[in-house]
Length: 360
Ligand SMILES: Cc1cc2nc3c(=O)[nH]c(=O)nc-3n(C[C@H](O)[C@H](O)[C@H](O)COP(=O)(O)O)c2cc1C
Image (cartoon, rainbow, N blue to C red; front, side, top):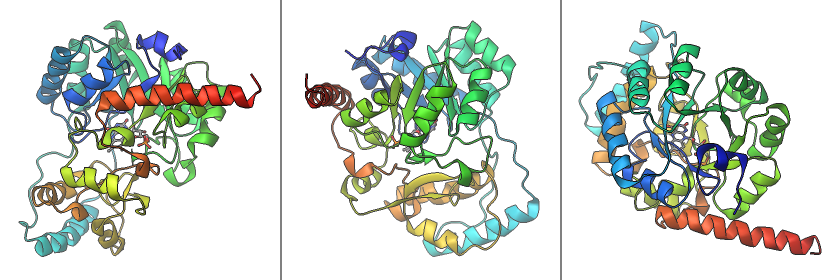
């Protein structure tokens, strides 16, 4: 049921992609459960060392023989001055003092090397490679393609989607502004690229010829059918899988997602220097008091890492990053396979309801 250009392209049963969610959420168990259930599971490899990434790929292969994806961040080369870093480090030290954490920790590197991570994807001949935050160099995309990977880029505007198609990607994730986690925006200002899924998907579908994967705010079969109606060939769901038992999210993060009907989300640069949507926290509030520029990603991400890690250790969600999309109150704690199956059943029921509406 619901065979689309996307299911044919990546050879999966259902047009459902579990988003790569970097930061320990997409355990091999989650990725394999989604792939075994007929969707496309994705390892969020953005923060993994090359060795950790290889281990994760091996473990997924032990758990499933179905296609899966690896997702990485296209490399970022921000210009951040030493003064900016020093001022931010001093401000964060106030928070560290309040939390009783060691001040001014030394930072060895800002981010993992994309080149080394991608080498693992090439060597391991991963079936599907997806990326966000930009477009990797043509030579890298060529090598991935030669080694058999289907390529999926991420766009938040029609212009970005066209740029991705011109680079020869096989499919495009179209990320609406409802989406949880980091914005994939890479051509324009993020503030001018906050287009909702409903508005963005049909614009992109009209302008590119590769399959479009809708993402942002899709939590169930209703969302899947709505996106197919807009012309998408699949959906990518992140928040829907956050609280499932296979997800590696912190226990209190899951609890907050499941119990926070009235919690609103907001897009913030506070944690990483790159705009990302998450449930409002005390850390976000305190960072509003900072008057200088927030160092760009990945610098700010590295500067706040110890605070987030310590908060997780101490079970204090107010200083953790609780990335989540606007539809998070619809998340459930069901196993990942149940989420995939239920979404497909709901899609079938929604389609039957629509046919009745049409008088058939
Ligand atoms: C916790 C979390 C982490 C995320 N990490 C990544 C990531 O590493 N790479 C990526 O391409 N997208 C990432 N995203 C964004 C998803 O790919 C997707 O756009 C988003 O989850 C869709 O919106 P939804 O959360 O409403 O389903 C993340 C999303 C969440 C919620």
